[in-house]
Length: 309
Image (cartoon, rainbow, N blue to C red; front, side, top):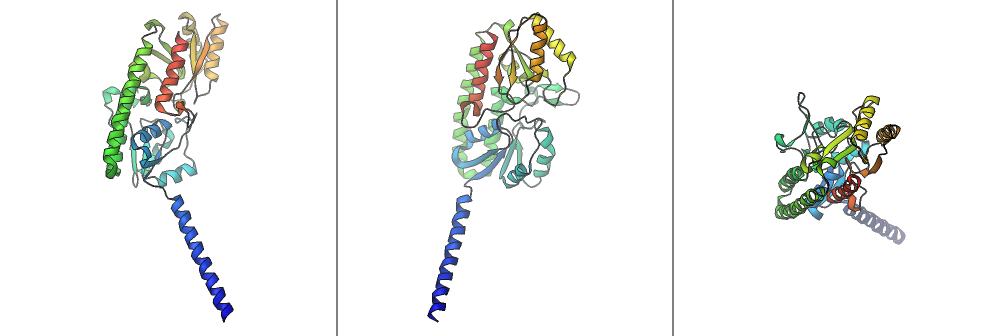
């Protein structure tokens, strides 16, 4: 009897310990605050600047990822299903994920950060079909509409921390205003006739409009757009006639097309260099300055200024 009693006590202790261990595991895995999933790194950085350490933010698309071509994986769908809030760019940037967001919006809080931007502020690439340019983050002033959208939805979802979010939004807006003025000042050092930015695809339209640059992309606003020998030949001739010194590749786009343009210029006796690799549809690597929106903008600006001078 004593042996049975002893064994039963051991069994009880083991059971209690396993339950405690299970609870500890669950508590360690529990996420404090809102769990937010974004598509691009640009949006994730925006959310982090508003929410600070009050939320967990998971971007689906990392450094060098092209959102135009992106397809949601099974793990992405699980992340989206677990999210309290989902933020995406909208304006057809995440073309292949549009249907996913539409279905999720029936049961989830899903928001396009571009909602609320005045139509007059958008660049239209196809007036007839009402298709806007989705690369809104390249205009720092327009990006502040997205900042307001994120703040609005966070304060709705988590009213307890409303004042914290509002204060962070105000602080980050000041930084964005400083960035905007800095970019404008830097471009004043280059003669207007030399402000020509040639890139792999047409992602810099808003940038050109805001900072008074002429922008030409070999491909259209989407990397799904096709280009051929005619486009390469036309662009090569234009670069030769205008004696353009540098063109730019992009971290999220193959440089094959731009290399064809450079070769076309060379055959005509004009040398064009690659001015650098710009961040367009994706930020830099995590935990680097270029992995933030402001850091990305400054890195691009440095390369563009050096390439055009």
